[in-house]
Image (cartoon, rainbow, N blue to C red; front, side, top):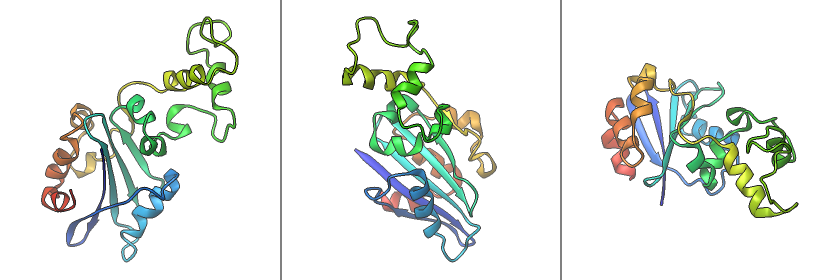
Length: 185
């Protein structure tokens, strides 16, 4: 089960709203959705919380027109999720942006230890093997900007230590936004 919410910091404090990510296909779409939450105050901070129960969580920070900052608690788990794929940009994963053949790019990295990048015994064009190659290229564990909440009271060491499940509530508690987040849960 997924949970997604927007937390917008305004001059009156934090405001929360649940959000539907069905129409969000890219990080740019997600950033635009966040910016719409503070249309009256273009320079306000908006946090997008995304969580797959017990598996991973992600936080996207949008400050005005600046590029979004992203943190994902477990990139490998998020890579298996349609919402996680939105957060795991080519730049975060060290991929060539805009590459049409992701598997070819990953093979070039020789991630499996074989000379040509293909696992032993892999049949050419085997979709299952290609999916495994993609999954292997995404690191297990945290990925992204662990300092994106440091100025709001959540230092990187604390963010890195949070476990999926309670993490978003813990972050909201530190921010003083636990009550508003609970209203949209």
